[in-house]
Image 1 (cartoon, rainbow, N blue to C red):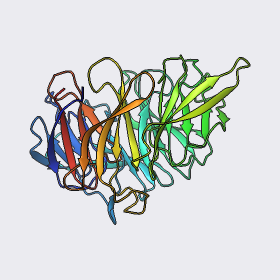
Image 2: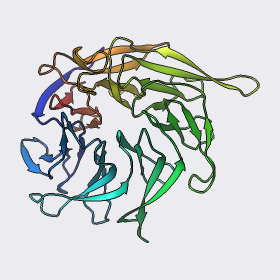
Image 3: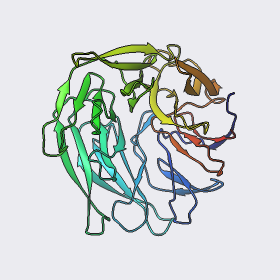
Length: 359
């Protein structure tokens, strides 16, 4: 049985990244997207965060990662962009009506988007930007004796690059350590991720890969597989990992959906409350401003449920721009209603939409 959703348009703004977090400390989730935040639970009251530089159809704001960076108890957020050439954070002011000060975390080449993973297993998230033409750097928040953020980061380069388009993180080997996935291969994690050498394996070619590439055991054989969207072309696939009796690793590609394009952002979550995770994704509207294959096709947001043999596609939204929503470059999910099911925040050049999960 398919889920049903109630769709609400939050804003006409064209930012492509958004997330939920409690901005003002009242215990209620708010929405943060680009230059504005919207006060929960109704999201009708809007406050300005600051000016975001515009470049044609784009805003230079490609992620929204909440984190208390300076240790004052208020959630800030991390972003980066293609044109700014830097990883940045915006400081949450005590007065919610004030604009948020921007700080540079690190200068670098063009940032496609940024994700947060616990690389070293200490329970705290590290920040990792996908820089297609650059190195792979881990940014670890510096903390004080109380494990509170200090406003500064350690920067550790683990791969000279180039990364290429696409980035994932998860345990490929089964040794409990998280490895990194590029479109052109993967990096095997050493015992100490910051001091020891990472090992590169040129095992596959995933194309114009999504960010993230999902790492999960799809078929239940004890080996983690990959789920990859084509961010700037048609296609959505899973790659089955196999290991033979000699210990040789191989990968087999299986089609999930060849009929839609621009699957840029992927989430692996339990969307229907059955205890099993599903794939949530959709088309990023005008990812390359109409230059991608399928750019003029209808928009859509979908979830794909594993049935034991393959993925079945369920439609959340589908139609022409203005009538239906795409999935943007950085979606958010949270249970806003307390029914135990994640609601979906879908930003994009087509506007900012909220989908209430009705079950």
